[in-house]
Image 1 (cartoon, rainbow, N blue to C red):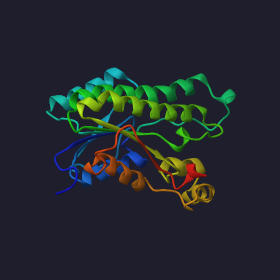
Image 2: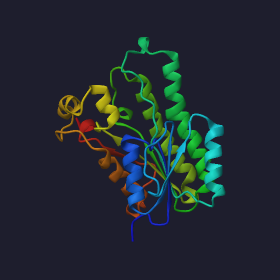
Image 3: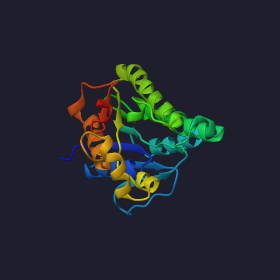
Image 4: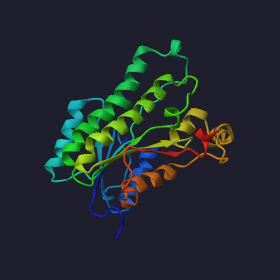
Length: 242
């Protein structure tokens, strides 16, 4: 039997990169997957994945999404809050208020909106997994908005874990290091350029792959991590150990 056979998983930011790998992992392990993204998603008809177009910063839209999932009789077993906005790497004086507010709206308010709407569909044994970052643990020049939201994600995870412990719902987070996603490749211009710059920054000697994060999500969503809640799992090739 596959690990998540008969379970329902909701993944935000599921249309590309790390989110796409997480969606594929859950689908491959037998779950009914709801992939949520702000942009239209590519996918095969009949692959068992339900793809939803939704701006998670819009509470009304998120509530409609989960009302639809609930109306279809689905109980949510796993929620992965992966969606995130990334600003330009610039000093705070060059960062516009609109960029700041957009990052907060998606990364923090969006996670609040989705979690708040999903929890009524969860029960004993439910799991929420939030995507933080190494930048939640260490600073990074030009990343004040993004780093602020990811540090906030750790506090959100710990406090929500305490709120939901009595209901039997576990809440944990994952902090990825440099992961070779399409977004990173676009930033550097090519996969090789990204690797050349980032690999020396990670003691393990190379960047990670989206599947590395999907594997960490598998662990936190599985019974193998049943004694974990309020924890953050660093999957960063040793970046924060330096």
